[in-house]
Length: 447
Image: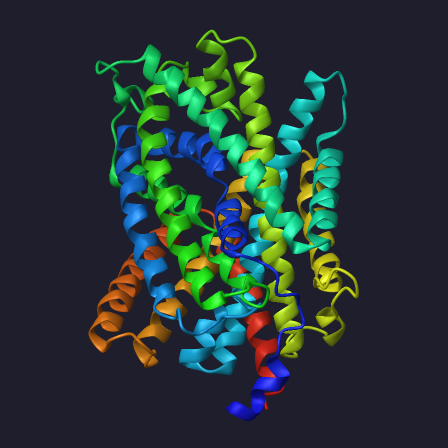
């Protein structure tokens, strides 16, 4: 194996410290995105069980992240956690894992761009400018692509600032809810008919979707100064930070949503309406601005990961070799970025132009991405059970990897059953999986 190392030397610039790597993980998760979009969706289905959904999802994702940490002495490289799959299950399994990440990050980017266009449209309207929502998607997507094409330190720094501002705004709203609320709040008003297993299942799936993207920190393995330390820390810290905030927000925001009429709770932007209802001038506009900034950071994070994974697949011969070219000045995978990023932007803008609802697009693309991520998470858990890892005891591997694989299997079955009434997403996913398998089998084996 040692003679193959020179061919896999990173071509990207090693320049990122631990804060930048963590910013990639947190920014792609999109903390405020959960408060503005996911928690209202979970609450509409799971009602007063919303905090329970997030607690269960938190446990599952903690197990998954700890499985990734088992590989802490092995750098994943630009292919992200698919590198862990490769180390345990071989080259072809690793390439298939990278393909799953590719479609996962692409679908995540398309889903978030749909809402980015919506909030950009809303903010511009408040400024007296009226642009078509599809044009807003194109503008926001092009901005993310251009920012990601430049120095990776610029894009990760942008994610730090956008996420910090947007989280501060949501915490301010939570303070208002706590000030106006009290122990007598009836969270059952979110779902007056009462919960059942199907509603709880739907809420749990949306809660799991809230965490998607934290693993993208591993795609910066070739650009981190100390990947063996920075990447595992980023994976663990991002999950703990996100999970803690999500649990707090699921309780407080759920209470606040009970104060809104049903039609407003089920609208596109219930948090802005809640902020306005609390009587603070301009609070709703601040929520819109926070959501826009968070979505900008999430799209930058997804674009960054998408470019690195496609770059790695091109180096492995799964995608065309020209996609492995690096920008001569910025040393970013610019060719892969534009070649896959631009079609993804168009894939989000065209349905918006055709009048398809933003929530529908977000749910369909989001479901598609969850299928990909659940499968690749399962591959990593399987790899941890197979591969002896330096510095990790056998019993720890079996315990962490086994629990993660069991919980992911149950979660996948629940998720697939929730898609039984809408087979379009799983059928499209199956088609892309077959295509990826064919490309992987066709690629030349590593030397």
